[in-house]
Structure formats: structure tokens, C-alpha cells
Length: 384
Image 1 (cartoon, helix red, strand yellow):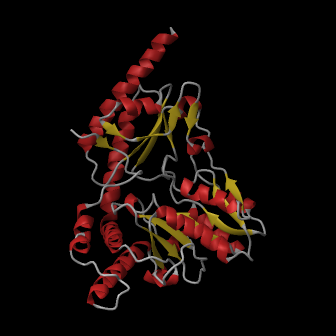
Image 2 (tube, rainbow, N blue to C red):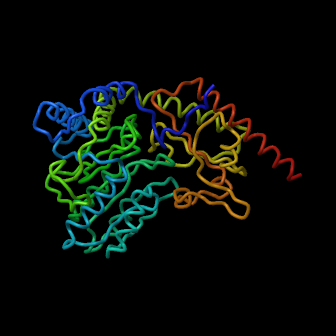
Image 3 (tube, one colour):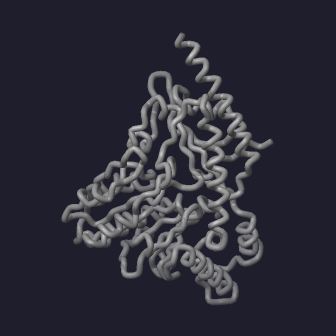
């Protein structure tokens, strides 16, 4: 039996329907979408169809979608593009203390270019307080960038409330939605964002493709220069194969999101019940209600998460900490949430997918609980 895969927040497999949609553009339709002949027209139509599929999913116009190489490039373009295009407006960025490196590293880079960054703290559940965001605003603030849902603990951020603040102050709002799309409804007007990032490999499309939503009227300074592709917003011949895959993946979500959510939440809840039994000393990280339906971050007291995952090769998941001889490296997210060290060191992230089965969950629960109970019982015996 292959290891039970419970790391869907890290990456997803390509959905078979998506693979089938991509195949003709691997084997047959190879034309450059910028070419005016039949070969180019065929691939251009495929790219524009995919653009419409992405736009339909998040409720925007297809002209507001720019294809990128993934979520990281989309985040880079949003931050660098806004701060470059609106230098006269300001150079201050507001973000949170639990963002993905695809945000924090860009902010650090922009500080070398004269920008300043404020990192708003989160509460014990990993949630940003909109009031703290407003308090961080200065006359120099040009951009607020807050992720929609956290990749480690699944907590969903109050983007709608933050958008009201950003609009009131005339500040652009960007949200990294790599983790939320495909797991909860995401619509740009409901969120009130000006820019939104999408990562294909988080939603059963291939790796190496993503998109950036740019609200009509918002200007961006280019970060890639060359020919006039993507309406002049991103140079480079479009990767038709991957773009078709992203479009089809978005169509599947639009048509089947409710059933995906139902299965993910059922499987996640089964995991949670199984791993929080009376005999297990554990702690759930993240908001108890306002979190992704597929994500379970759980800390087991007194154990080493990386050792747990190393020993259990029958379960594939992620650790929230790495334990070394002389220290424990806790993830930035768990630190920001002030998770007690004895639980943070033993935190693992289990993230289910749209096709995760009850049999897989039962197997994972047994493997993990047996290992944890053995370790915790040894600690109790050692205490006496």
C-alpha cells in the first residue's frame, strides 16, 4: 500500500480530467498563440478559454486575469508591480506575521528598494485583527497584502473587513489565495480585493502555472520585459499546456466545489476526532470554525514532529517544527500564534483532498495514534 497522502496543502495531484484536457496541446496543438495562422489561432483560443474559466471561478472579467508561472510570481508581481507603479503614492506595505515566504521575502527585498513593511500580529488562532491593520496605516501606505487562508493551520482571514478599511483609506489590497481556492468560495467582489494570487498546483492543476487577478484600472509596473504578451502585462510566450490545465481545474471547482467541500470536511473531522481521543495529549492549532475544511494542524505534547513523520513512512504529511540536538525550530506561524513549545514541537499538518477516503483516514489515525501513545506513555513512565 502506498503511503496515505495527507499533504494536499503542499501540492495536489493533477486531476485526470485536467490531464485529459491538456493532452491535445502536448501531442497535437503546438502553435504559438501569438501567431496569426491556424496553428496559432487554435492555441490562442485555448488560452482565452482558460482565461474565461479562471475568471468565471472568481467572478471577474477575463481581461483582469494575467497568467503567471505560479503563485510566487503572482505575489511578486502584485507587490513589486504596485509599489513600482505608485511610487508617488507611498512606499509602505502592510502584511501579517504569518504570510508565506512568497510574500515575506518579497517584502524584505522591497525594503532594499526603499520600501518599509509593517507585520501585523495575529491572535492565538492565527487570525488578523482588522483594527490592527487600520492602526498600522500611515500616510505612506500604498499596499496591504494579507493571505486569505493560512497554509499551515488553515485559519481564514477577515479579508472583507480589511477591504472596507483599505477602500476607506484609498489603499490597494492584495490577497494570496493559493490555499483557499478550491476549498472555499472565493469571489473578488465579495472579498473586495484589488489583486488576488492563484497557484495551479494547489487546485489539481500542474505545477508551474498560476494567475494574478488585477482589478480593472489598477496599474502595475512590469517585472518581466519582452514582447507584448498577456495584454502587455507579462512578457513571454504563454505556456498553453499548463494554462489549459489551470483553466480546466478552475472549471471543475466551479462545477463541483460543494461536493469537494463536503468530502474534505468529513475526512478532516474524522481525522480530528480520531487524533484527539481521551488518552492522547494533543492541541488543535488554528481557528475552531473559521478555517479551511481540509486542514488539521495538531500538536502532540512532548513528541518531536519530524521524528514522527520520519518513523511513519506510511503517512505523508508535514511537520510544524524541526527538533535538533540543542534546539527546536518552530515555524513562523506557530511562533506568531504563541503555541506552547511542548505542543509546537510536536505539531503536524494533515491536509486532506477531494478524493481522500475514510479507509485512508482510518489507517492514518491508527498509525499516528499508536506512535504518539507509545511516546507519551514512555514519558509518563520516565516521570516516575
